[in-house]
Image (cartoon, rainbow, N blue to C red):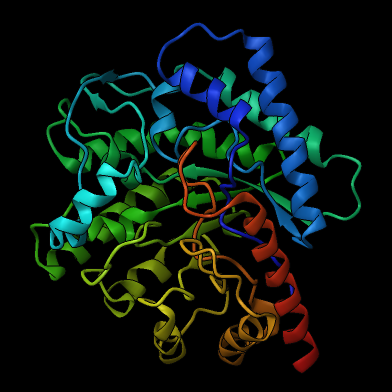
Amino acid sequence: MLTTHVGSLPRPQEVVDVVFAQDDGRTVDDAEFQRVVGAAVADQVVHQVDAGIDLVSDGEMSKIGYATYVRHRLSGFELDDVPRATPADLDAFPRFRDRQVQSGAGPKYKRSVCRGPIAYEHREPLQRDLAALRAAVDGRDDIVGAFMNAPSPGVIALFLPNEHYPSTGEYLAAIGAAMREEYEAIVAAGFTLQIDAPDLAMGRHIMYRDEPDEVFVERVAQHIDALDDALRDIPADHVRLHLCWGNYEGPHHLDIPVEKIIGEVLRAKPSTILFEAANPRHAHEWTVWRDTPIPDDKVLAPGVIDTSTNYIEHPELVAQRLRQFTDIVGPDRVIAGTDCGFGTWAGFGPIDPDICWAKLRTLTEGAALADKHL
């Protein structure tokens, strides 16, 4: 059974410093940025291999966040001090929310607003990312494959508000048309493309928090249509999709149940689906996957490791969780994964870096146990 994770990993402080300097608009020597990030990518790949991970990533070292980094690549966005959207589940418990904010437990990044036509304007950062990952994986026979993350059109729309396009549909289409260049470049470089799409689940209690569930499901269909159009020239088996309700400690009692969106998610083009299946709010939903007809061309990569707690799961628990899914689609169509990333935002995250690697090791140990049981 193959093992992987969702993509982001804790950034070393040296990386955090240069990424924040770049995001703040301070002058950063290009050669120094490449040196720092390239060395970190190489180190992260070594750590992943040492932990037994088969399908590795660059850890998103160069990105301050999995969606907001696009303002450094796309035209049409302006910095603005717009308020950050707070998930509705946190607003429901204001004392907890405020305590989290006061403690500094939250991501820090520049907010942007779309105020002009979107185009893929700056290609150099993408080329640097591709070169860094290629240098880190070339010549290694202990890596099965490598993937690189990119945000869905919908999650870009979630984090970067629109003040230019007449409708959300036109905004999504414009983002997709621009991001198609990044999507296709990742695949052309020989990597699997991972689309990060928390808009399909987390969007319920952020972007569409004031809409009823049935309206949100309609919006999910719209988001998937925009994504599939952007992926139209990429084979489905070169793409994986990450479904997420938000990688933060919180009540999550307003998360939309997976049974309400699973039909649309399975309709999306990517052949592999990564999804939360370990945390206390979604671990029970394996039965929904069991009771839903899964298309024969779909591969399931359930999260069997929680990424918001420093508990290290027992390998036997990991194996038990994996067997729940191998019973549904067979062992050849299951990849052991994580609920989300371990470093969703640069410089922020609840997981201690050393515990991150320990959790990934227990992931691979659990996958080996599952293989043995099978």
